[in-house]
Length: 283
Image (cartoon, rainbow, N blue to C red; front, side, top):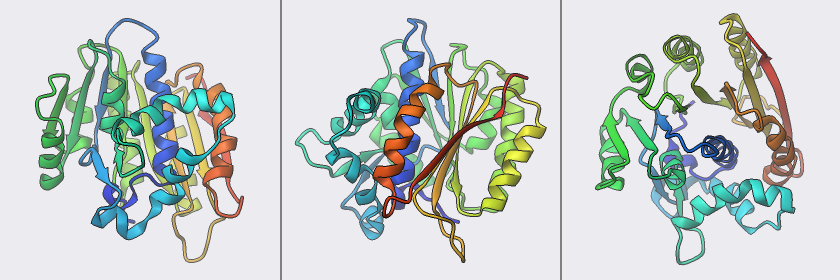
């Protein structure tokens, strides 16, 4: 499948993925020590929801469009607040025209001592990303294959932080590549937090991915999945997943509060489901 960020900006998968991102960053901010975010497939960073790509699919209307307008229960509202603040920061006049991708959301939350490394291989996207962060001394934008970076840019000098891996799934073998890259990265930086996004389209492919993750022997792998409709034939994207390695100890409890509401709000005809379990616990 092709999951170029621009076509799907702000959809149900982005909402779920980016809320998880903000909860991880909120945990890292509990300590004064600096941390680094490494975004391996950063895209262009900011998306015009009225533009050609996002406008063609309109997926954001059933994603961030629903969440922005929802009356959220207080516990959910508190947990979603950093994410919604990052979205509203790009829409200062109100309304909803621009959607921040993961590098913009991460940058919104950084403190003065923290750093962002945003990597993008596609030449035009990398140039747009560089322009979007022009003059920002806390952000380093590099045109680079994000997979290669996991073998050369770890560990960061801060020794704390998050590696976000959100590939476009334009090529075959991305699930295998994710497992291989995690093994390589974890050997170099076993204490880092890793968040790997994946699409749920073919349940067999996802099951094979989980089996491969278990076979790595890496401990502390939390799996988060949300589906908005049942699987179909022929397969179509019906869910979003993320594995988090070395998750913050509060993340599981926070997601138990967030996911039921997201599954209901973002699903088709109240057919949403979620799951939260451990691929592996302690090593």
